[in-house]
Image 1 (cartoon, one colour):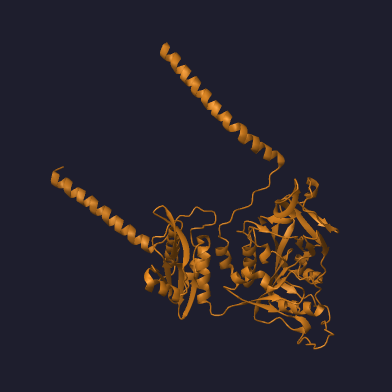
Image 2 (cartoon, rainbow, N blue to C red):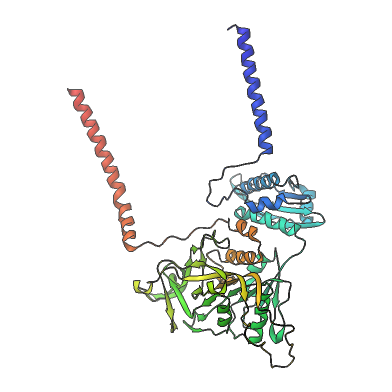
Length: 526
């Protein structure tokens, strides 16, 4: 081949390679994809987020006010936000645009603060010294004439949920209402500030009073009956029943046993809802579930004349990790801590033409405390206390419910200022849903420590509202799964295996090498 022909062939190959690279870039711009090998797809948009931005009917603009040249780990946050926004943009069909703004200088900082993004203090190392620097790490979302703000983005593990829920708030025309029943000793909403903050982003939170014949407002999307400790009058039950008969969704979060850890005893809580629950195919038992897989409590112990605070496992606080993998509400949860929980069950569903399923269960080493509810945090439990397996702790029933008052007269409140029920009793509901959890305290602020309690509560509301998309996004948060329970024999095997096996392997490797060298020397001598 002549030098001229060789040169022409080389130029042709270079041109072909350049064309291929250009075509690959064009295709990569139009066809967006990525490989994500994490278990829950933590770095890939969920189908719900793709559907949300893909259905936008108008432009959403995101302004990311992010200070440049921040030290680690804040610089990684900027990269994570950029990657996430690029994904949202790729699936938005051109209806989402974003820009990064460095709010440096007096004018830039003033603009960021006017938009609602506040500065935060971060520590930087400069010239071998710790210095405090003002930084901006916020997002502003604009849609039509509305604006939503994420003032500070520091936790990137919930970034997709934060962005998706913000876009959903912006584009939703009518917010749904979540109602909490009052008047029966239920906890005040002030005891659930974190739950309110989370739910308040998507829903309006209100209280519902059904005393004296007042009906549940028709605009309540979900009704929550949470930890009542007083008896429900028949008139109140009737209003809840008729709400369900009109297609309402209800979550019963009940403490069948009212327990007090400080006083170390409990008593059965008669709230007069048992017959109504059974009419809906649900049942809660007057017991306390104990579980070998449990949370710890802090107690003061006297040792050598000193008071020492220590953490001890307390089986009456089950650490639940056995979830129904077929139900969207709980399938991606890692663990939930329940507090003096009672067992629940579904009953006679086939005869009622209803469908139901257990949402979560205790571990394979469980038991129940019945009749006498006295407990000691320092008690030494034995194997005999954990002879049961997978006790049901929460359940859901779906279908067309028959009224608990179908064959009964309408109850009448004999007190003054009576508001008589209007209309006839509705006896059959349209298709709807009812949830029962054997613990009424798990969403309260004082119990939101370890576990996915808040996520479970929010998922439950979304599921009853039918907003399943938010569940799939929220449940992608990174949490540490609880350790699996193993037998004492397995523990000893692992313990002594770790002590013995590594040295044996090293000695064996040394002996093999020694024999090989000895064999080689003999061969050289011969």
